[in-house]
Length: 228
Image (tube, rainbow, N blue to C red; front, top):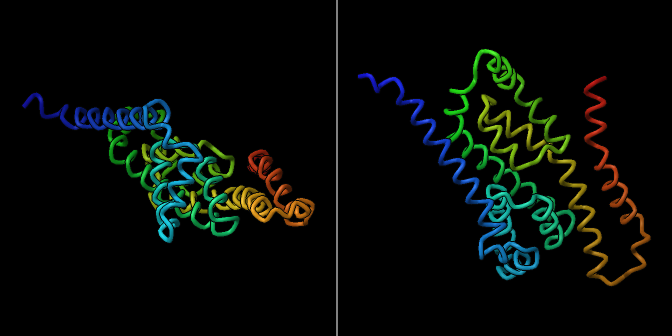
């Protein structure tokens, strides 16, 4: 009977160990293992394009898996724009990012929340409760200031934030940045493929560059607006 009480804490500790092992294994796989050559931009682009009509579905799955494996989001987003262009690239990138964000959140919640809750004392509990009450606004704010995407996905799973608040905040928060980046890369890609270098001075290219530069100031604007 004496061992009955520690069982939940022990179970949470085991799950947390599995989560840490998963994260460490993912980072090792894509950055240090012998198969890291398959995760280069050229290799990924060739793989997706080689799937023909299935390319959009394959890319969405690849993006979602890449999010969970800590592949750089900028690499995956640029890849989508380079393959599918500015507009369809945005659609497939956003869908893949949302699925990946949801999957990473679920992994963090399933494996890490129990242990994280056991570490929260009275002083930290009010912040955890506040995140639950203001989950959508918190997630939206962190997305708009470009908080590192994948760490936040797993990290939010450790908090009390409601899943649908997290999904809504993520979906809206990454919308503008994702569109601007894919529009920029996709526009440059279209000019490159067409060989019409005169279009580099077109309104569309200037708009793409302007939006991209504007996106770099979004975090500062959001922080200033929040202070005001």
